Image (cartoon, rainbow, N blue to C red; front, side):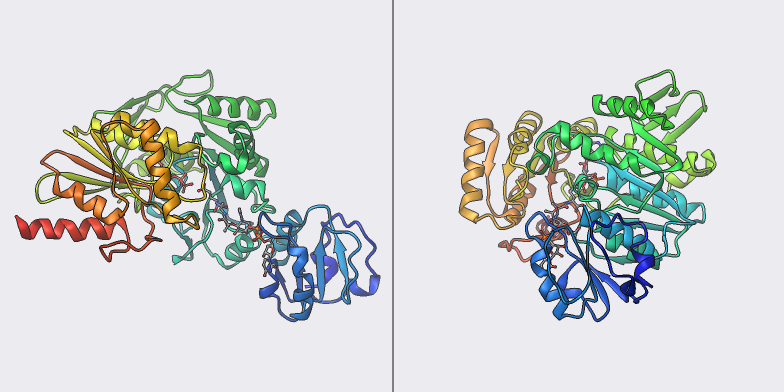
Length: 485
Ligand SMILES: CC(=O)N[C@H]1[C@@H](OP(=O)(O)OP(=O)(O)OC[C@H]2O[C@@H](n3ccc(=O)[nH]c3=O)[C@H](O)[C@@H]2O)O[C@H](CO)[C@@H](O)[C@@H]1O[C@H](C)C(=O)N[C@@H](C)C(=O)N[C@H](CCC(=O)O)C(=O)O
Ligand SMILES: Nc1ncnc2c1ncn2[C@@H]1O[C@H](COP(=O)(O)OP(=O)(O)OP(=O)(O)O)[C@@H](O)[C@H]1O
């Protein structure tokens, strides 16, 4: 593609010689290590490093053009100065990959909890209706039916455009994280439907306050197509606040939840049989997963699919064959009649949802195993512990991913938090696999052993039992239990 086309939508702050404009750009890179001959390199001021420091390396690797924000850069190749490199990256990626969202139904989902679950519910509903679906999210990216590992929930704008350019899928469902929104990772991407699930204590290490976390989430709604629609779960204060903002901007907004407003239809959650009743539509929607939180996810998915034109009956029928989501309220029954739940809960509210659901399901005794992820929001730890010590009959604090935090520091933190905010129900077993072993050994019929934090993920730490995930550990010990019995 010619440079003049690639940069046609950028607001450029310096003079570019005419003769360069007809030169061809062969590719785009935001990492100097990935630059090839004839590429344009975009220097991004990152959270950890400054990409401008790698311009020299990009030139040595063959970059023909550099885009950046810094002034006074003297180079052997043309330098294009812009106000914001991350936004420029998304913009040129959109042009280079020829606006890959065109002809696709685009759905973007934000919120603290429920993005992944709602994504997979939607994927299942659309696929049952015969439509192919791409998913970009926490567990993996799925393009043309092929799954790829992910580093981020929302990849960089360059990767998003590259993936969508490869996709022949009719529907694209994207989880959009607050980090992704603030870092313009969806620049150049617009949606037919933008969804907001909820907002709870999370990521305050990055956003500073719940208010600015909320404003980050709200940025998603600047990415609606002109005829796009917002779908907001309004049973929380943040959902109501968002709806008010969207309405004041004239954005069509569907309100979802039990709280009745002049614009929403009467909705009743029948928790006994996990069914959602939409009174005006006279329809009963069965939620295929346990817990009120999953009724919200199901209702969000139903409302979105219906608004896109799918028939209500078809959506309801498809939910019957939904198999659940890896690591989200995954249920195992032990040979002794106890139940094990593996769940990705890593916020205070998610833990509250999971432990409350176990109580509703009739748990005789709840043993909760969890830890705190290293180098992530420290301020939520106290609340997580308070919820667990309140709702469980026994909790076991153990290790989650340390990231780069030294083991001794994390063990000190567990002891400290437990001394201050815990109660007599608490125990610390640092090895996660041994914590699970202990809970399973002492379990009795109708008890619930609930293991949260890792969900579908593999372990980062090495533990005594050579298993790679909570699922493997539970399988390992439940087989042993079969042998003993
Ligand atoms: C802290 C953070 O958010 N970092 C994200 C950010 O990195 P960054 O751009 O700031 O990168 P950086 O390391 O400072 O480097 C700056 C620039 O120098 C360039 N560079 C660097 C080294 C080099 O040799 N050459 C070079 O050119 C880099 O390519 C980059 O362009 O932008 C990258 C591209 O989009 C992300 O992959 C990266 O996510 C890191 C891996 C991460 O862990 N992020 C987490 C906090 C995150 O984003 N999480 C959310 C989900 C949160 C949730 O659970 O809800 C997510 O969407 O994943
Ligand atoms: N609607 C909901 N409200 C509150 N908690 C929920 C909801 N849906 C799921 N959860 C809880 O949050 C956990 C993560 O769910 P899910 O993966 O669907 O959310 P997410 O928004 O994708 O999370 P993350 O951004 O951390 O990947 C679940 O395991 C469950 O404990």
